[in-house]
Amino acid sequence: SQTIHQWPATLVQPVGSPLSLECTVEGTSNPNLYWYRQAAGRGLQLLFYSVGIGQISSEVPQNLSASRPQDRQFILSSKKLLLSDSGFYLCAWRSANPHGYTFGSGTRLTVV
Amino acid sequence: AQSVTQPDIHITVSEGASLELRCNYSYGATPYLFWYVQSPGQGLQLLLKYFSGDTLVQGIKGFEAEFKRSQSSFNLRKPSVHWSDAAEYFCAVGNTGGFKTIFGAGTRLFVKA
Picture 1 (cartoon, one colour):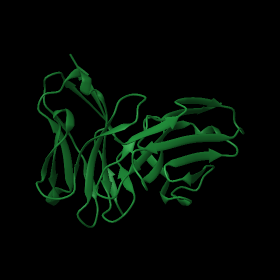
Picture 2 (tube, rainbow over the protein chains, first blue to last red; picture 1 turned 90 degrees about the vertical axis):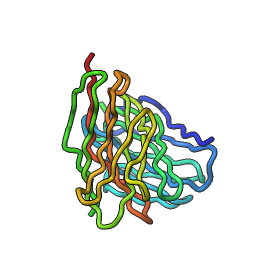
Picture 3 (cartoon, rainbow over the protein chains, first blue to last red; picture 1 turned 30 degrees about the vertical axis):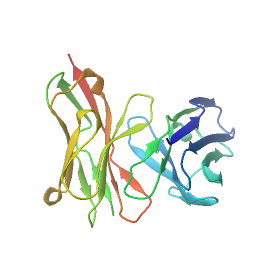
């Protein structure tokens, strides 16, 4: 069966520090991969999605970047975190339409 | 452009009462529609989806949703709510042939004893 792993679960980082969040999927090949951010009390904002290795689409210009070095690995990064980067980050995968997403358990990022 | 509206930010129902969460969407063609549930501090779990066929779809945990094209709605229902249903619920719409899904802002459900 397919599983998705996301880590770490929680992270507290100072302003200006780098960030690396990792997401891996098992049990499937060539998934569509997604990074979402959920601010407190708000809906989900799509940050990046990827349909294949090295293919990244950015939805919102910001302080973050994403990479897909392997088929089932998706990484969210920042060189210098801002206070506004705080939030709950969710990784998700999906096979072709019309299937829904399978989400990871999320990373709670607090920038201090 | 695609959009999803969940008019109710939060709803409180009594345990055992029926539930209906509203969702309206805007999309030029027949959309793919989804409902997800999120427990505090957790990821989202898919409850059900609609993409064609019978407009009344059954999901997990006793939930169902009805697609009404004339009203651009996809409301989620449950005949009898359990305390464990307290969570946040998200409606979402996906574009046919595309890669992205747009989520509503969510409705938080509170269940009182």
